[in-house]
Length: 214
Image (cartoon, rainbow, N blue to C red; front, side, top):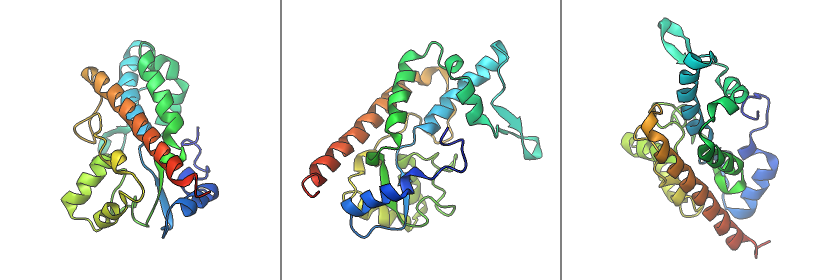
């Protein structure tokens, strides 16, 4: 619902989170980012399921015809997913539990970082489906491949922000634009487990590092 509502305040740059950045880190840049994205692997799986269910249960197809008559994801995909979660995860109880846990942690402070202008802007293409699909691991690799100046800032702050573990987490798919297939389930579950552990580990570090400061 938060992502569907276009008028929602961005959590990672909200006033209360900015205060926490200032408390924990020095030389805070003016922007921010949510590091590990639970929504993109969720969408990848849900598109796979909706394609199948559209043939069996007559649910809406997750694609629509765009410019040049090419198939693209529907504009209302998130609403379609939200309205059909029970059907989508029917038979996938373990995966649903993992996604529930990952989603609960997605916007906790341990998964948020301050970042400079352009970090996730158009030039760097952070979040672009084909470039990195908002996976920090792919984003970091693409920065190196393009010799992007943002790479220097990321390298300088991996240790200070304690986000090396988040950036080193390999995605469940070999390519950012991979479409979920029947054989991908185990890799997806393992990735979510590792993502949860990585966020919880950073939460422990934040607590131990800054509880005495307060």
